[in-house]
Image 1 (cartoon, rainbow, N blue to C red):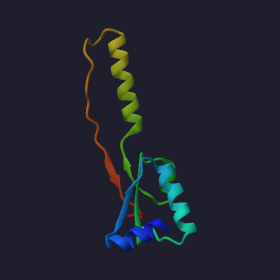
Image 2 (tube, rainbow, N blue to C red; image 1 turned 180 degrees about the vertical axis):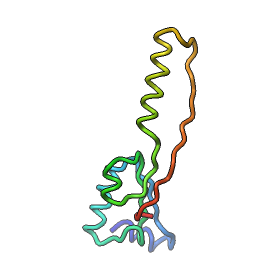
Image 3 (cartoon, rainbow, N blue to C red; image 1 turned 180 degrees about the horizontal axis):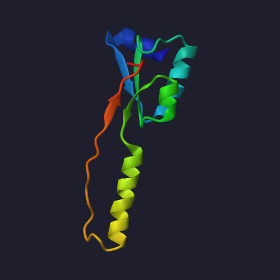
Image 4 (cartoon, one colour; image 1 turned 60 degrees about the horizontal axis):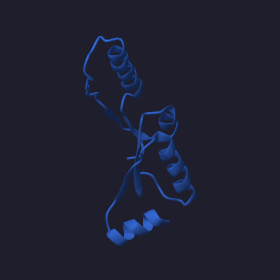
Length: 102
């Protein structure tokens, strides 16, 4: 498998941050088919804290999607209704949810 080859050639540990929990879960399933041990041989971190992350015991980043959507809606709604004249920028916190894939 490419992950093992890369690790052997470089002598370094291999880690991946995957852009979505569903994709990360698919990668884990494929790695299992090839006998690659997660996280011993390849660490995986997902993104979005979707329900599938809990099922796969996947370490993930919770970027507060619901809060992000509701905040974006409120900002646009306020602009449309004339409550605000300028677009607003707001920083939302995220958190790392550590599970078994790191």
